[in-house]
Amino acid sequence: MSNTFQTSSDLDAIAVSEQKFARLKWRMLLAAMFCYLFFYTGRQTFGFAIPGIQADLGLSKTTLGAISGVMLWSYALGQMVNGNLADKWGGRRLMTAGAVLSTIFNWCTSFAVGPKTLVLPWAANGFVQAAGWPSGGRVISNWWGPHERGKSFSFYTFAAGMASVLAFITSTLVVDTFKLDWQWIFRIPVLLMLVGGIVFFLVSRESPQAAGITPPPSHTAHDGLDEPSMEGVDTERSLSRYKTVLRNPKIWSTGIAIGFQNAARYGLLIWVPVYFLGADWKQGEGGISPLWITVALPVGMAVGALTNGQVSDRFFGSRRDRPIMLFMLAGAVCALTLWLGNLGTYGGIAVLFLAGFFVYGPQASFWALCPDLVGKKMAGTATGVVNCFSYIFAGAAEPLVGHVIDGTHDTSLVFPIVASSCVLSALVAFTIRR
Image 1 (cartoon, rainbow, N blue to C red):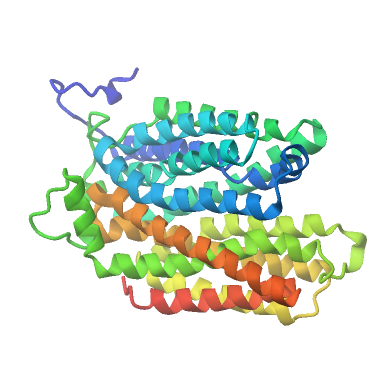
Image 2 (cartoon, rainbow, N blue to C red):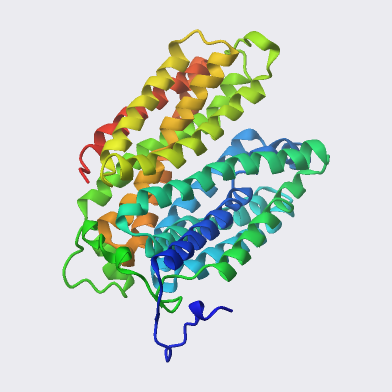
């Protein structure tokens, strides 16, 4: 092991050059991205198993939908808890633990023989899955300064966007190419997550201090961009971290704004396939399968995440509220275009790509806001609290969308609902002013 990563307390920290530190911070970012790239193989694969579970266990879609919803709420609770634990125990260890435990609970889910044996391990899986995102975000915050957080979280959120694509591909391979039973959806793809977690633990270090190095002055030159936390806060105590984060009104604004954003995101992810594969969509030119049209959505989301945070750094001086508002309003326009426009196949692909780009892109700025508002020492707690908000809103919105569609039999109504959520997110983001 290189002396750069000696961490014994009796060793003096090693001062490193700008170039060396740049390589190290990119190493930590890429390690977090690599790990999270596989996290959705343990969470977003349930839908692919539903037909097989129905045929094998005789469960209704209502029951399976409720089980999926329990996992979503469990994930929201896990965010509130695990973000704080990342600050207490370290994001490096917690993210790896989440990957290992999620693999175990996915395998337990694969042996289900009824609703109880299905919901219990799947709910537990949601809780440990929540250990991933805030933990990786904390490690990134420790290595990347405030003036570069938009860029670093853009790349991190891009990995999350690509994780959705990877979850789709691996699940399709299991059920379509390899012709395996539904149980293997919970057994094979998650092995990638297990590898990602182990690699992350071996490659990453919690912070420059934990790596035994002294960063160059450029790393701390912009620390003044962080908003000062409450004076006298004991950041070593969980209760103090929670109190400080929850007393910050901008954290509440951020949580509510990302809540509406995530409601719009899941509205697209869950209901767009239903719309394009249903009777409401009339296939246009080229004979392209509607299945391939829907792929434009997660691809657009990934590219949007890669873009938004860097826009906040380069064009708005690391101010996050403005690119959030800009993208959310553009996302509302795209959603209304999908609803009102008479789009053919190619037009549908283009606008759906843009909808994903603008609706999901602001997540990069939202996550950069967390350490911006409370500092690096409470970044995990803030990220967990904000992400808890986001999934509470998403979990509440999905039954509402389903009820509207059931009542009207018009799946296209998802688009004005998404547009409304985007506008509300933009309005709340205006109050952040950061």
